[in-house]
Structure formats: structure tokens, C-alpha cells
Amino acid sequence: MYPNGPSKVVHTHHAGVWNGENLVPEAIRHMLDASITALTGLSDATAAWAALFAPHERVAVKVNTYGGGFGGSRVFTHVPLVMAVAQSLQDAGVPPEQVFVYDCVTTDLEGAGYPLNREGQGVQCYGTAPDWEEEGDYVAGWTLSGKDIRLSRILLDCDALINVPVLKTHGRSGFTFALKSHYGTFDRPEDFHGELILADIAELNALPPIKDRTRLVVGDALEAACLRGANGWPDWSLALKGDSVFMSFDPVALDTIGLEHACELAAQNGQKTTVERIMASATLKRGAELGVGACNLDDIDLIEATL
Image (tube, rainbow, N blue to C red; front, side, top):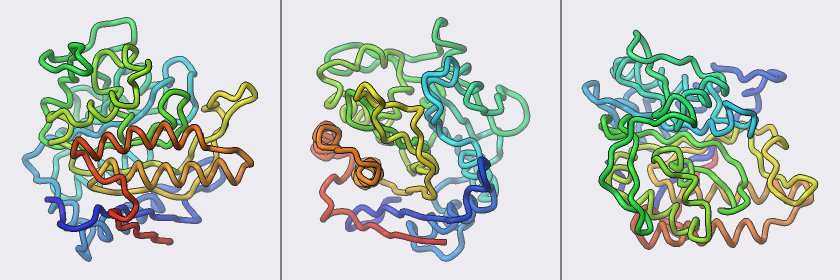
């Protein structure tokens, strides 16, 4: 499934992806088609998706909607991008009822604008828990930094995972993209935002249920929250419009390139990113040590595509 040689990351730009305040679905689909063909080396986008995902498989699509239920962020994985991913899977033969868009809680998905659907016709979309106050459908059996954790049944019941994170800086981890997006995949993310967060993120992604199911990562940089607020803390309301998506088989490589992009955006807006880079780099290095992916730029084949 994964090609030999350097980890490949495709960074695809489209100047027409925004029409005012609205995303253009056709442009997003063109971006996905260009990305998947460049990543796989196949000339036909539908054939590329079909080579990665079989019609009998159940596919989990992990998004980042943290804060959607109570206004903690206004930058979420964009719905049109996720729907384009879901449509690409369907065009490749995966029935819509076998595509599961999920995050930690249903209320955040709803607040971020996702069309909820549980057991109805079409793409499935719901959280592991109804909201932050209720018990979710998690399965025990794993540990992280010596603490027992439970993983989302949505993920465990699926054969493959597509991680679709959104690019944001973070006060404790430097930034959040593919690796940290999985803090919505287990039941105790609030207990892992302390001193060990940098190692915890990498070790979470090294757990076999996550690592072995991760088949594709589509990084959302259509909007990015890469700036600090007046108090020097990352402010997710300070979103910057973007024109690109990232795609890779390797979440560490994608985050390595995503970190460079985030730091570049911040620098263009007059902000230093030394602290963010140091923190994020620690997680990336640990991820590489655990075999999750490549963090050395010399080991990453970056392909820039402009539509």
C-alpha cells in the first residue's frame, strides 16, 4: 500500500478555491484529484482512490471540530473538503453508508456545520459521544503514558482511516495537525495536555489501532489559525484564508511540512515561531523514533502543485 523510498507529501494550491466567504466544491474536488494522482502515480483519480480503498471496506474519516459546540474555535476541518473526500470514496465504489465521518462529540460536529446522520441512508456522521457531558462509545484495552485509555468504537469498527485535520497552532504542543487530531479518538484527551503532551501525541499515533488503519492523510490548510492573540496565546479566532491542501500516506511527514507552512504564515504576519517549532519538532522526532513516519526533510519528497 505504501510506496518504497522517501515519504511523499503533495501540497496542492488552487487560487479559485474561495469565492468570497464560500468554498468552491468543484475547485476542492480538482485539488483532491490532482493530489491523489500525484501521490499514487496513477493518472486517473478514481482509479487511485480505488487502489487504496476497496468497496467492501468501512472507512472512518477523522475530522477536527473541537469547539464547534461551544465556540472555542471557529476553524474546523471544512465540510466541503470532507464531503469531497466522501464523494471520491463513493466514486471509487465504497457505498456511502460505509463512510463514517467522526470526531469526539456529536455536538461539535453539528456546531461546525456537519450534516449529522446515524444509521440513515448516505454518509454516516456522528461523534463517539453525544456531547462532552455524556459517556461515549469507547472500547478499553490500551494504555498511554501508563494510563488506561479507551478508543472510539467508530474507529475500531472500520477497516481504514482517512485523517482530515485542520492546521492550527497550539499553546502546549506547538501546533495541531494530523498527529494531534487524534486527541479526539480516545476518551481522555483532557488528561494528556500536561508536561508529557509532546511524547503522548506521538505514542498515541503509534498504537496499532490508529497506526495500522491510517491509510491516507488529507491536511486542510484552506484556513489556518497560526497567529497569537493579544495575550501571546494562540488565538483560533485569528484565522488566515488559505488556498491549499496537503496529502500523504505519512502523518509525520505531512506534519513536518505542515509545520513549515504554519511557521511561514506566522512569519508573514510578523510573528516569531521559535517556541512552536521547538515543541512541535519534539513530537515529530518521537513519532519518527516510533516508526509512525519521517520527520527529516531529507527523507520527504515534497511535491508542489498549483491549479
